[in-house]
Length: 330
Image 1 (cartoon, rainbow, N blue to C red):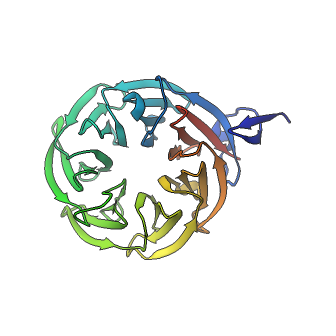
Image 2 (image 1 turned 90 degrees about the vertical axis):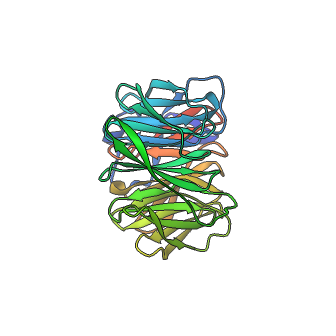
Image 3 (image 1 turned 180 degrees about the vertical axis):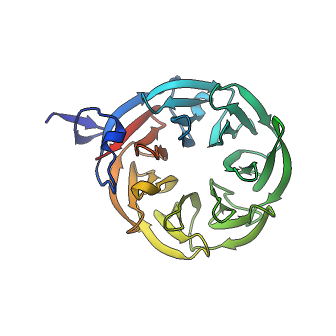
């Protein structure tokens, strides 16, 4: 069996079958199936990666090149480059649109996710918009603005969006401000990390219901949700991933990792969470055992990734190298 080198780690090269043919229940091993060279002149800090099941695409906030890159998940090739996003931050998609946070442009760019035509620009959501959440039932977009420490709410109105609420997050003032949380429809709640706390926001009243303090010493980072266990997966800069009960915020488990965490994603059907670890790899967490069971090698300071929830392929954005590695479960 031929050997190939992947970022200093030797892996077995197998035939490049479709990820869906390889995806297994409860995977523990992963192999590189493709490295995608992204367009643009340089690498550098990039801040979010999102998968859209309806269009089978992966959206990459390529902040250093001032755009968002769309990858076709069927062919693992670049499908579209969306210009006009000065510094890409958070991304969320609904049935029709992609919402792209522009941290430096202080706006949310709205594009049709199929035609890629620009639909709108939301410019009054605060300074440095980042976390974006979509409430499909209410037709509402939530925008967390880092430097204003606030959450704004927009409601779909005709062919556009109108701002219906805006409020400060807790603690206020904040030291580091909000990161990217999640909206959980089953609870009708937004879970918003801010400094080392988590604000729990009632989506109906658009007010902070309570503030959880799960014992994080430094900063709470992104939050993913596992519907099977009703657990939140919370990354931290403490070199830990916390597993929290989504009902009351109690700590179910603490999973030690090797570096500061940024983006975390959950693949509930495969019972796995994948965590961007700045130590230079992806941490693979078993969602039933609540422990790290494997790592996937990457570049130091890699921090954003997503998972194809249908075929279980993992897309790891190596922002410094300006590449996306695609891994399949074995």
